[in-house]
Amino acid sequence: MARIRIKRVYEAPAPDDGCRVLVDKLWPRGVRKDALHYDIWAKDLAPSAELRIWYHADPAGRWAEFRRRYTDELRASQAVREFIRNIGDADTVTLLYASKNAAENHALILQEYLQKAVERVTDA
Image 1 (tube, rainbow, N blue to C red):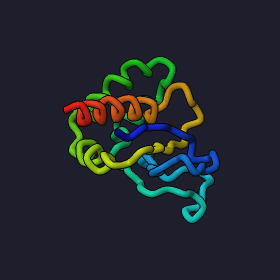
Image 2: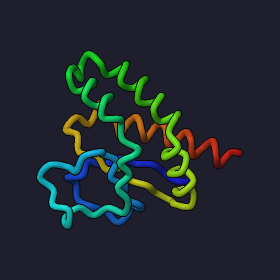
Image 3: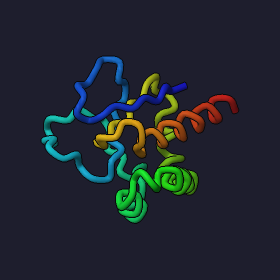
């Protein structure tokens, strides 16, 4: 079963990162494309543009609703189901995100969702 971790793109890669997956829809600011060590850029796992724009208008006031809406998007996403199948053999998957807010960002929600989904597939 894969262990799902998260890490800011600005942190140095580590040997135990496993498969490094960029999960932002937009390329991170200030990072050269040849400087970021990643294996997959999974844009389809990021929140929709509409949801992201809505959330960023009032992050503090909309976090709980953003979490619910993004989870709904993940639940309906074929890309998420394919990603879960593809990481089945990995020991560790590190989700890379650019947000400055380590306590409230989409990667936390995605990590939780993917970990539960991987556990369900493994238990089946």
